[in-house]
Image (cartoon, rainbow, N blue to C red; front, side):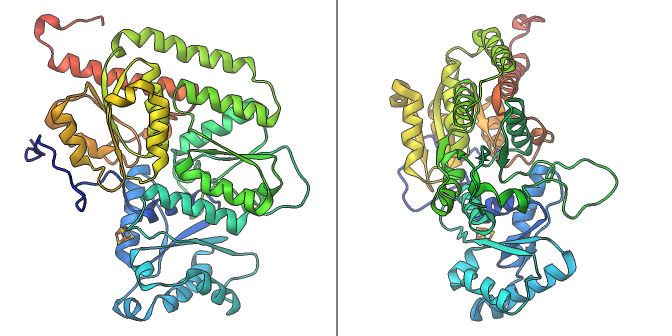
Length: 460
Ligand code: SF4
């Protein structure tokens, strides 16, 4: 009864958020920056902000997340953080020797009005940036948007700071994977490789936040997109941006700077979104889809068929990031399940439009809201009024699941109370099978734990 005070009666709110379904912009910027090889993220603000950003990522990925901070004091709050950032840049390049520093702002530095672009220029003019080293940056005021907005802003910052062109067009395809697990990024690279397509994936956190235990500490792990790879993204044939909220801004920036055409797709979660991803990749690269993918798809369809009796008509409540929720909703509907309640703390009109598109007639029967007031409190109230058979979302859903006795599948960011999620992809056809397994396990484990003794069956 952890949330026993949540009332069933819903009162319209306009200026109060209770338990937001999102987190702060710089966390996304930091995660995106980690996807660049030998890059040290730097939080331009107080030590407390940076500690929070680092700990949120460390708790999810279970790997130590390194980052610098401008360590604002009372003086910086009054006079601005330029001196701290200049000193920080100098210290970082001297002591920690990254190739790149990725600076993002915080609520505090944004409120003061620090001009990071000007400060970075001054650092260069003052000779604080060694030869061959780079500073990239973006603005991440956390009183607007969410961690997804921060990720998107840093991806655009990566393009502005590192993308280049030799002037000679290539057949390479840029893929911006959106905020997904490192295992998902690895799976997208595997799919492209099996199709015989040369890609540059950025950001790429595989082998950065899921590094192997070798007994040797590496300040900058082997993974991440390299400066060399980014320097040819302007020559690529096209960019595929997976998820409009996290990836479209970066793709647009490449188009503006180097005229690389782009296509925005959903993250390939589930059958239909994966079909569209494979088809798009095949058509932009001009290659045939190999037979092995027909077999992969067939396995997913086979598992869907085997499980259909358990999923048919089941009501689902879900929450999280828009780029995940859109293809996941489509997948649930493909499975003949019924999404009934959905919240996402990330604002943006496109979310509602896309959810309506993928839901069709079902949309009229669904409770859907995004933005600041789309919080966990509202989701709980909806659930009190119409109980779903399954809840899907990040760790914060466990309180609702426990209080209401609903099977719960952990998916999204952050997952703070389980380990292993970042090692198994949920994208692609095989990722779809993993989602199915997790959902059915949750539903049947709940049945086994709560059914009467005479309903307890060995074989289900
Ligand atoms: S003050 Fe702003 S930037 Fe810092 S942790 Fe809080 S929300 Fe994030």
